[in-house]
Image (cartoon, rainbow, N blue to C red):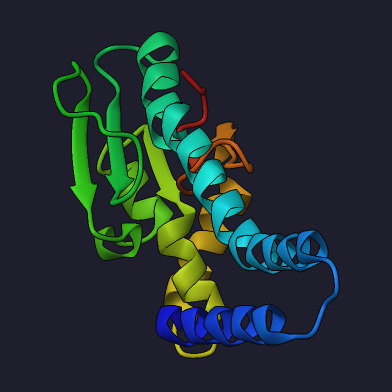
Length: 173
């Protein structure tokens, strides 16, 4: 794509530079406008990427919130792409996907108090709901039965996935 874009830019500039324009200043203005059109979107994307990278991600915000608001000995199960809880006092188990650990009731029977879900995982299942009906049923039950303590939502200036922190015990911490 970059090669094709460069070729198109080169062709556009060649056309403008050979076009019989009486005023060289007008030709220069047209060339600058053509270049601006080609670089505006990539420049905007680069600036927005830098802004998102400069701000704390949803994963970091979730980690900070959990450390500040949950009991230190909380029993937590999280899936990949959630809050990085290594080095905390939490009793943390991490799975590639929450579906791997059984249903919400199974987690509850195993003494789990908190489940942390990432949209980078559950969105994959929802995109192909018929193919992954069991996984979709798991996440539906988590979203319906769990007590949502906090959700961390990405924005134009904050990157990474939606992080949802659920209590699955009758009494939230």
